[in-house]
Length: 146
Ligand SMILES: [Zn+2]
Image (cartoon, rainbow, N blue to C red):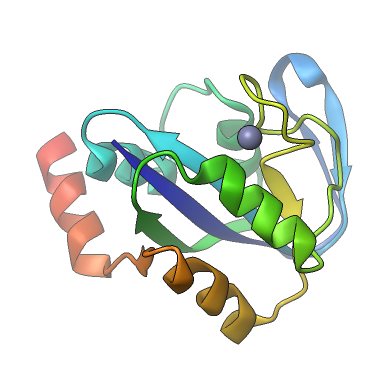
């Protein structure tokens, strides 16, 4: 089990159909998604980077939309996703759409808009023992999947 953070860029104003939630409009900018993976976290993260998959979670619909780029993934200890969401909200992230990406918890959302403060982001994540995922690790996970 692991927690992870996805760093996502949306290039232009985008209206995306996010499953049952319907059409959601996103302003261009940087976003963060805080999630958790049971079992093999490498499989979950590799899945996020894949273009061909069945849409299951809110984040799947967002990541598969045109103009949306998954730029980086961080991985860390289990059970951190809600405290990471809170930490980013405390540090100036905000909730573009309440409830997005959060289902079984009391967080306002797990999909947050974040000004591109890379050093601050890294500080928040490394303080909680998260580390950026290396590309080779993802490639390895992908080769297991395919
Ligand atoms: Zn939460």
